[in-house]
Length: 82
Image (cartoon, rainbow, N blue to C red):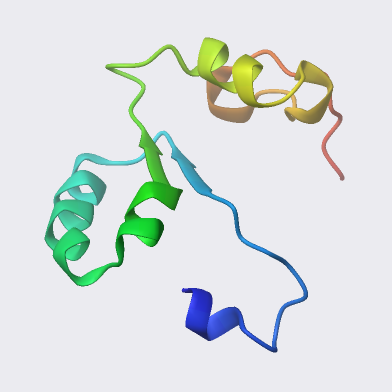
């Protein structure tokens, strides 16, 4: 993904967090990991709602003011755009 965004998007990707992913996403990530660099593997984070309390995980990353209301069943304070 880094190669795709070089010179196109003016952002630096530090991590990709996937919340509420389906079971097949874990299978896909397991198959793709051997083809990714270590840095990219570390940056791809799939948060499974069955193993991890997503609210606590998000609270450690960002404030509740940055989480949209109703996002994956979490308590957030940010209003969604209509």
